[in-house]
Image (cartoon, one colour):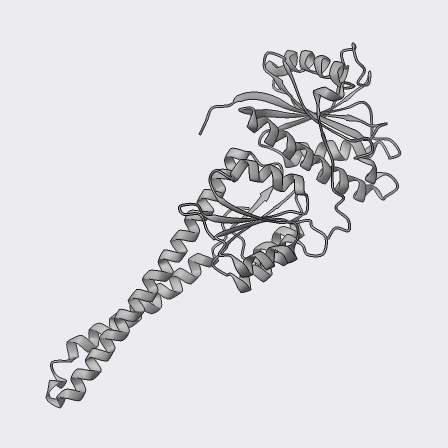
Length: 194
Length: 175
C-alpha cells in the first residue's frame, strides 16, 4: 500500500546498518521499502509500485548494475540510482550502458544532497509518468478523430472535398504523436551526471 | 537548505588493533566522538596483494565516512573537511599501502576535501599526536582546532561509553 503524497522508494544494500541509517534519514520524506539483496529487491518490485530505486553496487550474488538491468526490463519507468564506495570505472560504464541510470552516487554522500537528489529523481518519475499519460490521451484523441473522418466518408461520398481538412488535421496530429513519442522515450533514456 | 555547524570529520585508525574511530571536531576544537569499530574490523587487507589491500581499505573507509556523515547530520553538523589519522603505517604491508590509500581519498574525495596524516607519536592518551602529513592539505584556520580536538579524542579512545560500537556485516564474495 502506498502512502499518499510520498513517493515510494526502494533502497537496496546488503549492509543492514546502511539501510537503517538511510531509513532514519529518509522516512519522513518518502515511503520506504528496503531489501538486503538484489533478489529481495526484485521480489518487492513484483508487489509494489516503486518510483525510485537506489542500490549499492557491491553486493554478493547480484551487483547493483545487474539488478538495474533487471529493473530496466521489468519496471522501465522506475528511476534508477546506483551508489558505491569508490571509483570503479568499469562499473560506471556498465551502469550507464546497460542499466539506464539516472545517477551514480559515490559514498560517502552528504545526507542533505542525497535527499535533494531523491526528490529530483521522484520529480523526474512524475514528469515521465505525466508525459506517458499525455501521450496516451493524445493517442486516443487522434484515433477518435481518425474514426470520425472515416465515419463521415462512409456516410456520404460527396463529403470528399469537405473532409480534406479533417483528414489533414488527423495526419498532422499523428505526426505530432510520433514526434512526441520519440521525444519522451529519448528523455526517459537520458542519463544525468555521474 | 538548513545551516549546519562545520566540523572536521575525523577518522582515527589503530593499526595494531585494526580498528577505526570516527568523530567530529568543531572549529573551537571540541571533540565529538561518534562511532568505533570492533577490533579486527580492518583485518581483511592482511595477506592479500597490494591492489586488493587498497581496494578493501578504500571501500571499508568510505563506509566509515558514510557513518560519520550520517551521525553528524543527526547532530546538525556538516563536514567541512575530512581528516584521516593513523597511528603509523598499516602493518603487514608495504609502506606504499598507506600512501596509496591516502592519495586515493585525497584525489577521489573533493567535496569536502581530504587530508591524511600518520601520527609519529601514535594515538596515546594524554599525549598530543604528532601529525605527519601523507597527502592532502588542511585549511589553515583548522590547524589549532585539529590539535586540540585530536588530543581530546585520543583521551577518550579507550572509554567505550564515549563511542557507539558498530558491527559490520562481511561483504564477501564481492563482484
